[in-house]
Image (cartoon, rainbow, N blue to C red; front, side, top):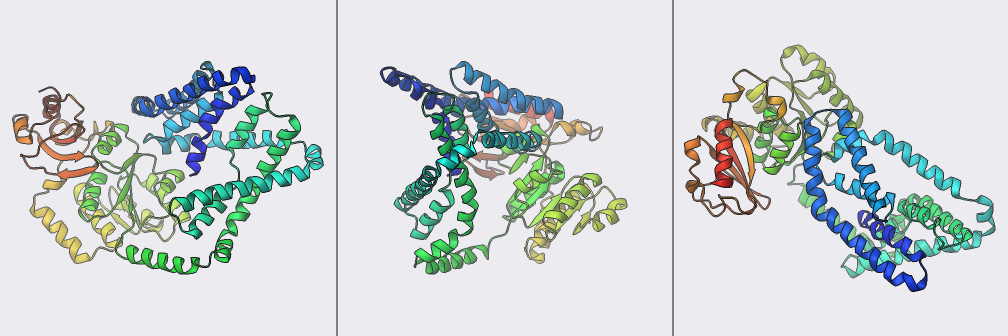
Length: 507
């Protein structure tokens, strides 16, 4: 709901300048402004996200932190300039830039990079709001300020609580929603800054509105703090409903395992994720290789672009709700940083760490690692076994699972998504089987054909997985027929993968 309130600023930023026109010209100006709003939102929602993902991928491939930061500034300032050229505001362009970036897998990294700018500029913004207020003028208008403050809080409460009730919420939930959202938002100051430059309201009225908005935000924490007492006081049925809700939540959570955070999504991280999937354990993986993130995400893996060595990335990945954290790369210095942050934020969270050899065992153990295990594929099996046991899976089931995997000659573990950082792993890298995701857009040759009809065997390529509308089919049968929009994950050597992709797309 807060996001929807923020999105409502977009048409308001476009329509407010039109309100300053004369009554004769207002109708036409409003129509033009509404058309601009529709065009801008359509371009952003339809084309913006796709273009932004591709552009960020190109920039991230250069693996330059400075270039990545400059790209964020370029997009933000460039969109602000374009919206100003279109007769709209600079603030609207910056807001739309934030919306687009938030829809990419690079959002966590961007959030971390711009944090110093965000904190400074946010403080500067609120300083300018405070400097705009005239305390003497407000003191002479305090009855109007108090009346407008009460009208704002009561009006938003009635509106939000009424809508919540109309959409089927219980009385307690509707009242709680109204109390939590009845205060004004910071985007109100953005609108006020635009209004003060237009002949819409006299200065004294703007002072009253700004003061009421500031006071509502100051009251918000107090209202939220006492909201439960108010709900319990005025909703007699809330005690019974709360008891029923707690019972239902407890019943569901008894059979539910919390997720795992995988730091690094190279070979070991991907093997580990597949073990998690075999046991039905949810996970979130963080990785800094954009090619690997894009291909694995296209195949349905829960991986995002982010630096596991940064506090905000771990918190965004759900550190406070996770049941286990696994460091799947052999970098002791980075692992020590992760352990320090986990020890500070969630000291009770078990952490399993991969190490190159036993020389780092003592350091990592003393830093708080629950388990330190050795390298490569067998290390992935050990990481998964410790993680699954810590997640509550019975030990006999874990042992049976890995016995089955070995008996199947690691069929489910073959291949990995190749990234730019894998290029120099070893001299025989070019002969290692790998995975590659191919999206079947409309017009692709393979649409409507079965896997057996594709003839991929001659390229020594196999279909490892098909993802269709969010559903993954591992090791599909030869009779499986492909559809438009499918993501086909191929397994094979580099040359064969290129030929197989060309076969799927062009025939």
